[in-house]
Length: 117
Image 1 (tube, rainbow, N blue to C red):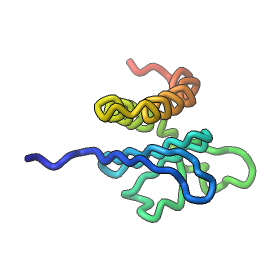
Image 2: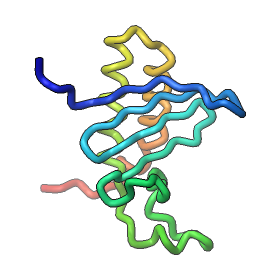
Image 3: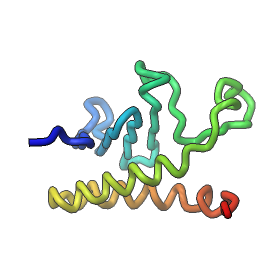
């Protein structure tokens, strides 16, 4: 039996009872939260998950450490698609909904990206 490439997690946070779904593929980890506070981590460069790069780059004041980080919208979109597919396979409608929320949040960033020729 081949080792799986993706890990899918269903979670509810202890204190705030926020419903979450998570998918990890390779060194990428996406956490989709029902409250809209989605997170994305590059575990190869940030194994402690200290730098959430879901909303990068961040030019706003106070987020100088994010300025060097490129936009990871394509990778996030791919992981959200994998999350959605896994949720469908597991008959997890909440997971499908959360993946769709992530994709909806990314739509403006993906639409603004230059088309490569």
